[in-house]
Image (cartoon, rainbow, N blue to C red; front, side, top):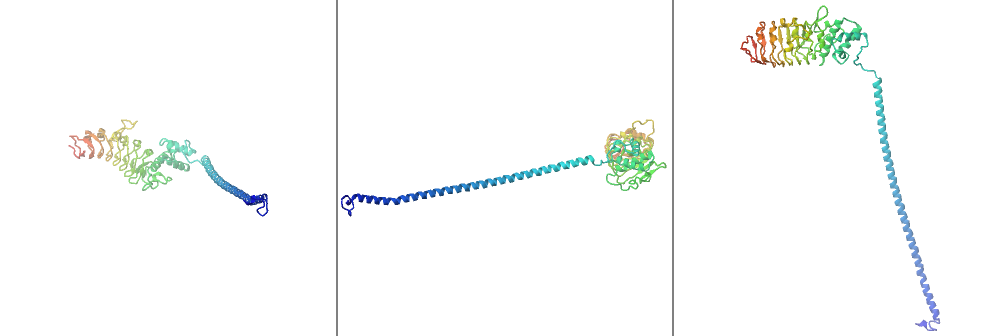
Length: 399
């Protein structure tokens, strides 16, 4: 190595050479030191950029979270508003319901009351009419305007206030008006001249005939499409002699008061749809000549027909000496023929066929000398060996 020798290397001393070399090395190392510093700066910048990016990412994430929270808050607020709105609607509906209920209560308390049955009349006319009609019709029924009798009461009060009339006529008109109102359930009668105009005298009404005293003697309205039931007020026509209501649409049971019509001569109620038992004590009427109740729906036995009404004097005259025709065929009658039938000595026609009668044919029938027509077929009788009457018994033969 030349630099170890003194004087070599261009006159430079080794120390100088070494120093020179050393100086050369130092000069060579200065550049890497600058690079190192540059790299550090770059790293710092990169690190700073990363931090910035992280901050930006955090900021973006925070913004997203904030936006999400804001949306959630808006959604919750909207939901709360919707819930509040529903509550408002419910409260409003409740308020409307309360108002309606209060109005209904107010209307019920303060409106003009409807006409309703009252236990006390409000005018002298009402009091008088009520007093005269109450023996024939229950007071509650009279004061109920929905009943035929209540309609009659209102009409009679109006008439009486306009022009008072006799008490007997008041009762008679009540019986007729109640009868008319009770038998118009399917509309008006086929013919009803005068009946709808209560301002007319009842003796001028169609189907009626009166005597000189204005008492109704005849009520004959057969085949006139009457429909409904017969009211007991009809029995107020105490002078009635002829009652013919055949071939109608009359239903229900018959009033038990018909035996009170002590002037009745003809009782004709055939070809209807009347049910229940035959009128009790009807044959106790002394003037009765004709009883025709065929083609109905009567059931029960015949005993009541021949019985005496309660309070009837046994020594009083009955229809035994006047009855000519007893026609009660084509019903649903049961039991036996009462032996009392043999006491009706004037009986000319007896028709009991097509019922459900049983037992023996009473031998008392042989004592009826006036009997010409006796129809008993369509029942379940025991034949009598000594039957001398020309009649149809069960199978049409009497032996």
